[in-house]
Length: 145
Image (tube, rainbow, N blue to C red; front, side):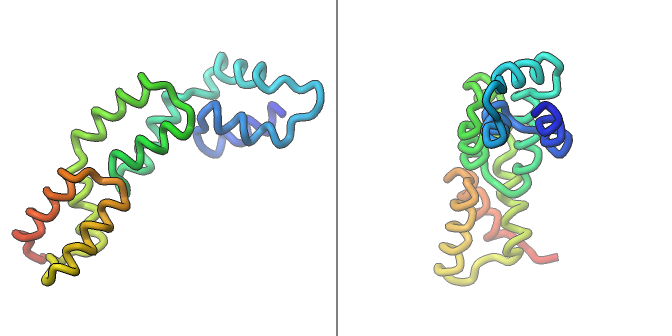
């Protein structure tokens, strides 16, 4: 069981809850999963803070703050970790939304339907209303390279 846990952790960071769920499938009678997870934390192989930072780094270039924060909460992270990351995510959300918009569309919308489509895309990616409005205003002034 320990070898399987280390193999999972060598591939990428996991939250305690996520790793526990993965390992529970393979637990046999007499295996103490909580003890193994505690040992991994004590040995610094498993860290919820490291997992949270890793997830934010992987997702920030494609998704908005609300979607990333929702994913962090679904992994069972404590509120202190999530609130710390919330501040840093909200700081750069407008620029991230503009980057995502440029990669996907790259041209300002010519009709109201196109504008609505672009706004829905950003909303589905989890960007806030203020970030979407920032992109809409920036799109009006956007000049193609």
